[in-house]
Length: 149
Image (cartoon, rainbow, N blue to C red; front, side):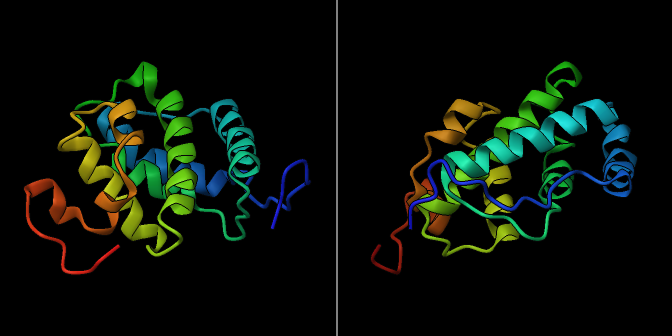
């Protein structure tokens, strides 16, 4: 299926409630999103969906990313919005690269583990992580994967 140039149905405008819930948690770590920043992230999410040919129906990705990454010592307040925008894109790329074999929560858990672990807080390193790592995170530790890819 080719979505290039298609207008995808996006129900992703960050709601005030979602933003408030996210900020309630992230503010404890010195990270906060303004309504304008949330709007920018919603637009970036729409762009990411188009670029990756994905469709999102439920929304809530922003809140999940905030909750997973807000306590990272690698994220600075001045980079928070840009980091979340990039994490959204990486998430959708990985969903494609892993063939949707991971649920959203499992993939976000793996992304955070990789970011805070072997990637050392580098979004570039996270983005260049082979998809197999997320399917078989034990590979990072040198263990044999049980399943063939």
